[in-house]
Length: 220
Image (cartoon, rainbow, N blue to C red):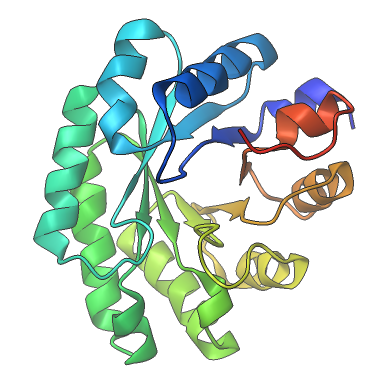
C-alpha cells in the first residue's frame, strides 16, 4: 500500500492534556505537507488552527475521554466547536449507560448529538476495551440506528486501543451507512495496513507520519 493512500485515511492526532501551541502547529504543518484526512485536536485550539490553516480539515473531541458528561453539555461542546471552525466531531458515549445496558439512552444521546452536528460528520467512540462482546454489538446497533457516520474503537486514553478483532466484529454488525475508525495503539506500518485492509475508513494516530517517514512511532 502506497504511503499517500495510507495518509489519506489518517486523522493526525494530538490530544495530550499538555499539548502546547508548538505541538499543535507542528501537527498541522505535517498534516498539510503529508495530506492527511484531518487533524484531531483539543477544542481549545480549534479557532487558532482555523485562523492559521483555513483549508485544513479539523476534527475535535466531545465528552472526552470519559464520556459521562450529560447530553446537554456534549451538545453545547459541539455547538461551540462548530462555531469555532471544526469540521468533524468525535464524541464519547456514556460508558456508564452502556455498562448498565441502557442502550436506549445511548442511542437517544447519539441521535441528539448527530442532530447538533447537522451536516458535519459524527464519529462515536465506544471505548471497546471496557465492553463485552454483547455490549460492542449493542453499540453497533445504537450507532447505526441513531444515524451517526462512524463507530470508533477507542479514545487512546483507556486500558486498550484498537484491535483487529473489534474491527471485524464492528464490520459484521454496523449498518451500511456507518464507517469504522480505529484509534489507540496504532504504532507500526503493519498496524496501519491491517486496519485499512479490514475496512477502516479512518485511523486516529499521532504516529503515522513518523512511521511512514521511516522514523518509527513518534508522539509529538
